[in-house]
Image 1 (cartoon, rainbow, N blue to C red):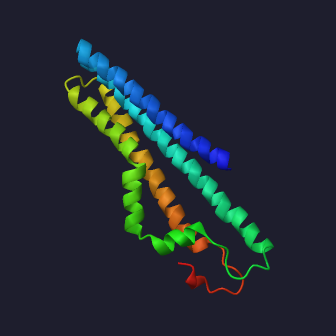
Image 2 (image 1 turned 90 degrees about the horizontal axis):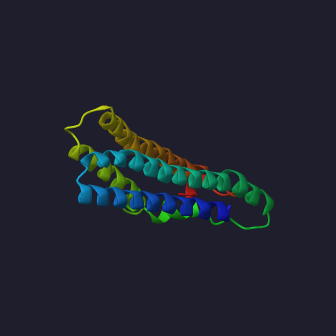
Image 3 (image 1 turned 30 degrees about the horizontal axis):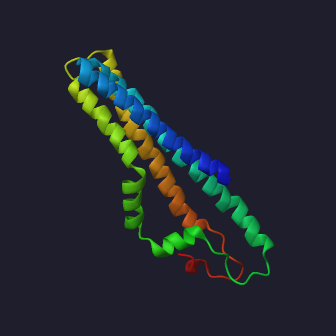
Length: 180
């Protein structure tokens, strides 16, 4: 699982790196040649980066859910001689971090690549607003997808995290209200 998680993180970084490279190439051509219509290639790139980044976060959440729902329960059942609950990452976060701190960390640590590419997509659409042909409208739809899908996945991850704090198994004889 560790290798899979590292693979997801590496994949996210690669997607962002490829996207930045593509933006640099497009920006170079636009700056040198003045072909503003090339900017319309940015929305599909932004969409692919946003979707790839969000998918990596979702896959990581699935790994966490497996650990919590399957492996954790197995450990709790099979470590009967252990006194008290096993240490839990989710209980630790719930005790030491307010929701606002977690939200700020997500915004400033996880969201910048997506926000950057959505901004680049919006800028491209703004610069080419005179050419409202099919490609421009398709770019607008792709930009909307770049905004919507990461938000939906982010909400799903947030709900999974909140659900997780309440679902971390409790050792036999412990008061469930003492988890949070």
